[in-house]
Image 1: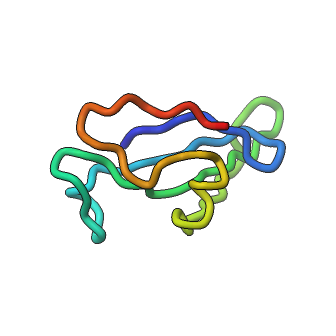
Image 2: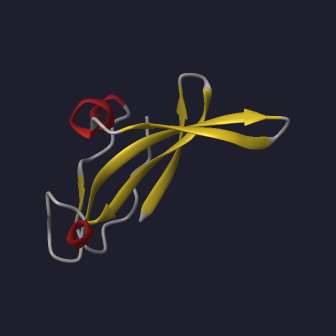
Amino acid sequence: SRVVPIEVSGTRGFAQWRRASETPRGGPEGGHVAWAIVALDVIDDRIAGLTYFLDTARFFPRFGLPLVLAPGEPLPVPR
């Protein structure tokens, strides 16, 4: 996977892309495809829970993130 830290509804989180070869949707050979936006539930500086937003077509564009990363493409900078 490839991940980028983001802020999700005022809390810490990250965007995750998985290798295209590991996903049912496929994608570019050697590339990565959007998998989830993950929000961390942090209590006393410890991760207490995770919330996954799997509607990548809806949520990745809201953060200015691409749905596909080509092989060797640098990680994007979220808005």
